[in-house]
Length: 122
Length: 110
Image 1 (cartoon, rainbow over the protein chains, first blue to last red):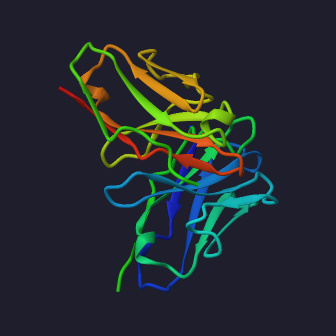
Image 2 (image 1 turned 45 degrees about the vertical axis):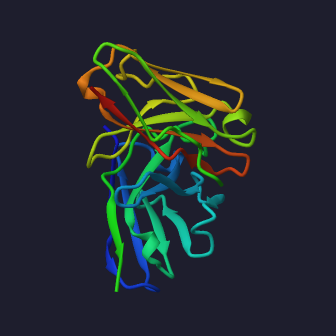
């Protein structure tokens, strides 16, 4: 059974920063591209970012480009999302997920974590 | 990166079939066979039910099927059951190596 466990969420003031983590287990983490997807309260899913299996290639949604940074430590089987310059509209549950698809960048998201809630409020 | 277009809601009676559409462009849905569908129950993480346009993961009921024509993908649920009541999202790979989701469709089983 694949496990993805997010942590690091919390309440932060506008303009603040957070680093989210996603601990992976029971699969070869270093072989998979990993993604972050978020969901604002009562809203739909929004794709955030993807990082290639080796960390060399990354892409972001326009809404977070320049403020969010995705990274990974394959020695620790952990994915990260550094979130800076937080805005109220970044309030959401943040999920990590993997794509075993042929490209790694496609939305073949077969396993998801339980999510971690980020609340941006003064 | 405009969201894919889904109907906000659909409904059907037990035993009936329903179809949810997902409209995109030639830069996403129409350009690649990388469309996925997810089911999300309240308070839970999304669950993959279709990938690569038509493929069902192991363990997903064969009552779920999907297709694509041009820039529009479709999910069909046959033999509706009460447990199918949930939110459904389509998603697609895009020409900029990103992913885009639809706005979601709330399925009500009457």
